[in-house]
Length: 314
Image 1 (tube, rainbow, N blue to C red):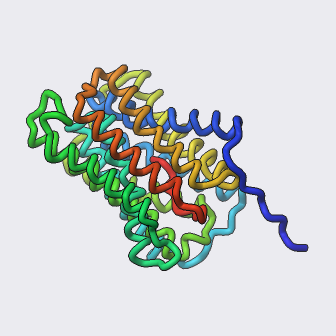
Image 2: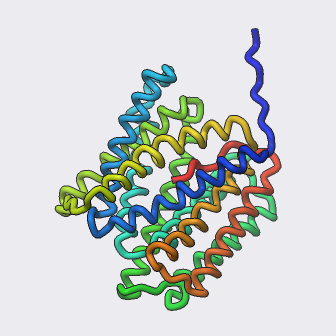
Image 3: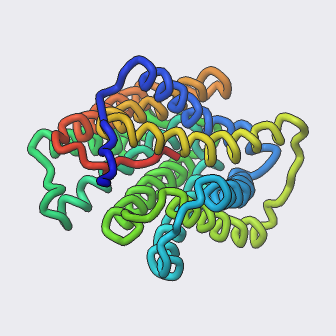
């Protein structure tokens, strides 16, 4: 008997509510890392949460879903996406030492631009329309505002050079995230169980972060219950449970609508960073945020073919 095709539909009230909750979870992620930076280095947090979440994903796939992982992927495709993901979070951890959580999240979410342009150049069916190119240019203009007008877009206690270096790390993290998605799209991982791909990414994040943390001697852990709770939040809620909910949503709702809604995450991160960490919302930062998000929405919502190339949020 042929397998019944799953119906994919536009967002309804339930899907909208779940997606808003996920955006809040993802938006608070960078804020939590920044808030605990004084008690545990952000890169140490990445190493711990990636290690724990990798074990959870492996156990879930092995004992609960009983997935059949594709053989022969570990040392090629798995190594590739694991390395890209690991380097991405190296940039996130280092960047958060110098920039706020809101700016980190905004630049991290430029990843769909790198995906769209890369697939446009490699696959005929992934060609961008003129309107989507306009969206890319709009988001690029927002990035330019940050780097060419640092006095307006960035403000903090550190010098302008360190702030720009942190911003560059955030942008490079977005690039690596985008290239991770391109690698999955163009390799056999596109047909693998999602837990297998996620496990390779989390394992790569842990294997890249731990050597740097140990080499730099940034292993200090000076927090109490609050640090442990936020570590639990990052490991179990963000890196494990929220991804499961995200892939469940992708099976039921249009990918472009979910992808566009996920762009609320950096907006929430900026708002939460300002409210909880007193990060400044300068006019330049707000302008850059508006341009980047508007451009990304334009790229995603005008993809009439509904291809599942959108990124699982970090």
